[in-house]
Image 1 (tube, rainbow, N blue to C red):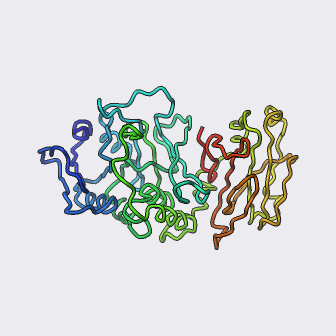
Image 2: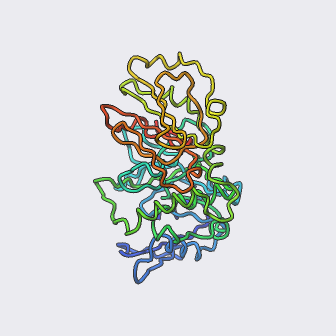
Length: 380
């Protein structure tokens, strides 16, 4: 009903009912319900809805979302390229009153998301996921590395022809929807665009509402498969390699980040780098820098710059280094008890052009402004 009331365009609503039926069905020739005898899963459900769609444009949304006035007209008028995917500005939903939730924190609105670091020993999996990226940018329509996946807008042609629909190969029926769409679009020559001219509000379920569902089996394995797939450029017919996405499309000024986000309460900041294809290190990786800018936190923060030169045995630590540096590549590694262990599981270490850092307080891993990942972005 909210979609029909606020789209400001001729719209058809196709609802995939995968298991539990709605409490009431809306009698309208603009609404089609797909009632499956047994659950078919997220990907097949989305593909089935798009296949039935008659219009030029499609928008996928979770059912627990509200929308801004005239959102359909705004998205259509803003859609300059067929290979774009647009994401409206996201807020949290007040489900009882069906409006934007009133909050006292500054989490919302969410416009940008970066991709977190794979294989970093996360609790649930070693894959890649979108993470809220707080950026102060005035552009009303702007590039974003990733999205949540609860709402996105594109042409039917882009979904069916360019993306080739959603695939269950490797992904299974549920995992990595946003990453499949995002990476296929970016590396295929298109763009993910946040549109701040309009919005949607997505229900943050939390403890109050619960998830309503359980993750299907194989989700962890699918997330891990997806990371390996994209990092190693295994998707056919892409224009760009994943390295372009990291190093050219969404580069980050490392020095600016270190200066802005160094935490005075943190005893040590450890920066781990594995420049395995930067040769020689000194001529390519180091860049002159006025270290007096670091001395603001010198009494409380000790900076360690750690280099890997191909294997753990070639580790050297220099706490006195005067040249922070930009990197092109980082290999797989894990961190434990303030000791470094080079984890060279990957048969193609050069396929991981990233860097990462942890902050440590009292020998425990802490989340200092989240992790600086992939040269994509940071969480404030």
